Length: 375
Image (cartoon, rainbow, N blue to C red; front, side, top):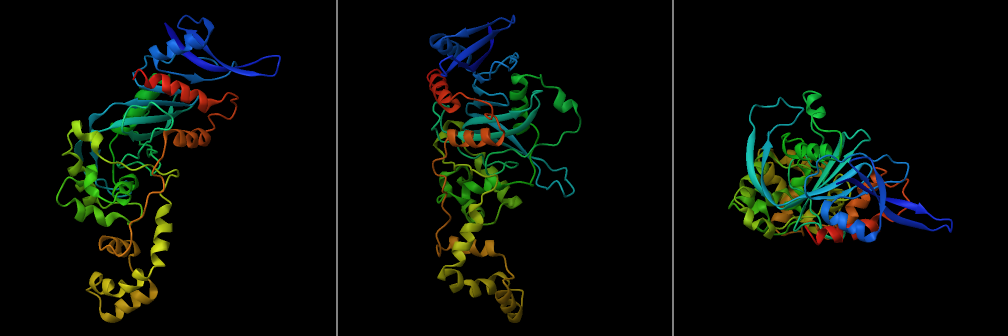
């Protein structure tokens, strides 16, 4: 049985470069595969790696199904739709963490994980995305996970560990990286420090009822006002979102709408959108009336001072304008955000391809098509 397979570059005397596959067996033997042999191996083993002749191969360990690509410091794998528990503590880390931990059992669509690891096979970072179907193409769309502890680009905020045992218990190979990545996402709990990824769903979806957050009568009241509240949802909004999501049957999960991730860690469109709204006539037309209602406990002089000094919550006011259809909600400029686009960003950020001469993305495209035909 083959343990690893790697795409390598072969330089001929005629200055041409060819990408072929090099296989290493569990007994330490090494040999090259032609195109047909490479395809057969991929169909049976679902994994591919990229290296050059100077890179030492290492056993991957017992590989789970769904591995899509292996790079020198990144592994990509997918998981099918399933129910998963989300453990949520409605406090920030900086606050006194309460003993309250809420558990929500939610249905998930297809998930795509991109795990970044170091040369010793310790996990560094995890990205996760949702998909409508198994990964079969580089151009397939991916979506941001509306779950706490994720940034807008799908990057997980790294968890804290109570001891080194929580890190050392994984095997130091690709298999260990995959298992630790899954645990980081689902078995370390979440808190209220980071809810930006959850904000993207109602912010960039015109009809909240088409999403997993819109299954309760109160959903619109709780979540339509969160279009422009910066980078954070309120605790009650998070609770409402998950209470709604729990009502979704897994048989229906692929019918719901999701929104693409952002290319950057934070949704930079928020400030641009606010600036645009402030230039509209609607912004000034309704501001004074809104201030008197929003700050009804203030005297008239205090409200006029707020108006003159800009001493009010701009995000709440813009949410008011959106809720009353005085301005258009923000549009998501990343309507078609593909696996290839995000993969290129992640590979570049982590210097994965800095010494490679083969056409990696072309190879990935071919490999993905092969794997997709048997997934």
